[in-house]
Image (cartoon, rainbow, N blue to C red; front, side, top):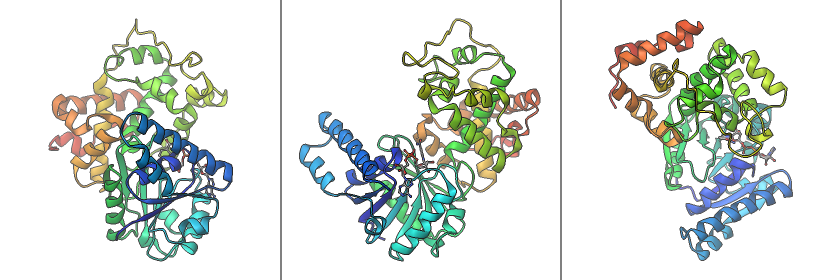
Length: 379
Ligand SMILES: NC(=O)c1ccc[n+]([C@@H]2O[C@H](COP(=O)([O-])OP(=O)(O)OC[C@H]3O[C@@H](n4cnc5c(N)ncnc54)[C@H](O)[C@@H]3O)[C@@H](O)[C@H]2O)c1
């Protein structure tokens, strides 16, 4: 299928970023939102971002004009999708809303049109059930900020046709992204799933009160641009609580949000966006006291949990090739894929780390898998 026109539904943070990526790849892009002011805000964000590209000499003023001429902002859903080849939905993360929109898209878009959702967590299969074309419904999961982040997870829902997946994959490639196919519609897909147990470990450490976030982060300061607890604050503790709750309902009760996290959220200390969370963000990035790093945890604990979760994706058939997981993790923000790191640390050590954490916290999610214990994965 030759995709020429894309319609993006929702002009918020992700929607306008996806629309811009589409314009930069040469597509005609309709961008829809419910109110003119939301559409205008999205258009302005795109203009400002394109201006930066011009300023850096990455595109010319003429190219910018050409891109903006291909942008069709609208509050009319019917008009937005009438002749679209691919629709990418990026509205609020609300299943009822998404199903309602997919039913409308099904009614308004041509039969051949592929309908994709950018949901971070919801079942694409469930969303597709609102349509009469489940074969033409797929997941197309961009990462934030969509203009910069390379990874796009292209997700098979239960009934997605190979042709729809392939066409979506090609669009992502044309957008200069790194698409990775997710074979099975499963909570967290690849990137978020592999990171799920490390977020669980952090909330368990928070609950146990020792080490403190600063003592823990101090041990990671030289290894990563943003340390683990600082990252939770950056993402937003409400979002962390929400996703852990979602995993508690879909993966394991182990993920149930613990009191320390819940209390922070209910007191309004959500992290960067409220100026205070685990750290004080009122004067910009927090100054983390690195004088007293923990010796109880190091990099290998975090990696062990990630590699272990990645092996579950293989065992569950969410991904068939471990290189796809490494590709996804490296391009979603992780730098280096977990299996590549595992090769240098050694599976014996990682298995020991998983067992140590599973026993210490009584958490089966941390228990090493059969594949971990075999330690034979080649990337
Ligand atoms: N923000 C992220 O980090 C991120 C990353 C990947 C995926 N996602 C997913 O992308 C989706 C959008 O997230 P976001 O961060 O852009 O949210 P956002 O709140 O910035 O934007 C959502 C937009 O949807 C619009 N909207 C609401 N109802 C609508 C309707 N009926 N029709 C058209 N537009 C409607 C809103 O007006 C708003 O502009 C969610 O499913 C989210 O899970 C978010």
